[in-house]
Length: 281
Image (cartoon, rainbow, N blue to C red; front, side, top):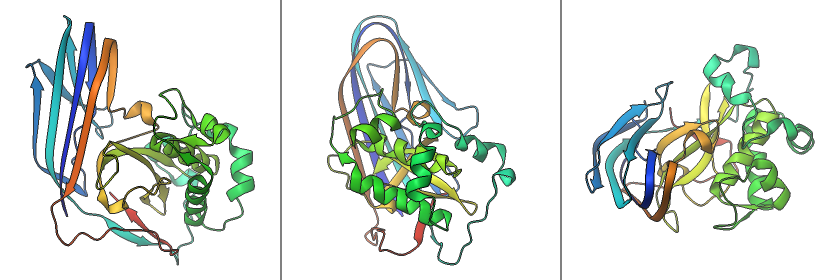
């Protein structure tokens, strides 16, 4: 299944500033970047590097003098996924059996204060017998109890803020889902990517939970088809996988994002009350 993804960002720089961008589609076991292009106007020296775990791709550039600049990225990506039927699974993966990378997604983090949500999470979701049922119940609870409102929160909003104020955007929905999963000892990580038919078009955030040896994707906003996502990055929370991190004096002036499917056979994957989920390896 092939996708065409594009993004363009523009900035007004008022003084010496370093930018770290995270907009490249990843090459993974289930996602192959067939072609990609990056254009910076005016031309600015930059470097591409990967995170210490080799799982995220970043671009860094430094600007010394005031200016306006823009960057545009495009790629064609071939993506595969597997549908996992959890109906007959016992979901028995003990914390002691997890490797160090997966176990790192059990800990509280800046935006996902799972240690402060343990009582709430156990009261609401602890009675479900399988891990998959717990995560689905968390996903449904967020969808039914948190109001999705564009522009309602900012970069300081955490899971505690979201569950208190009962409003947020996709970033906040993902942080709350992650925090509630971790409170139940379920590894969960942040997912950011391009999304087909997201309205209005933008970068999209959701989360993945580690169940029976697979990272299964969940989206409490229900704004897009789960098989219409192209991965940019994973992280403990949005701080690990921000689209743009700015160190200096600059202001963003525009963001444009597009994701189109290139296969006529595309059929949106939606939850239908069954126990089938999607995993991107």
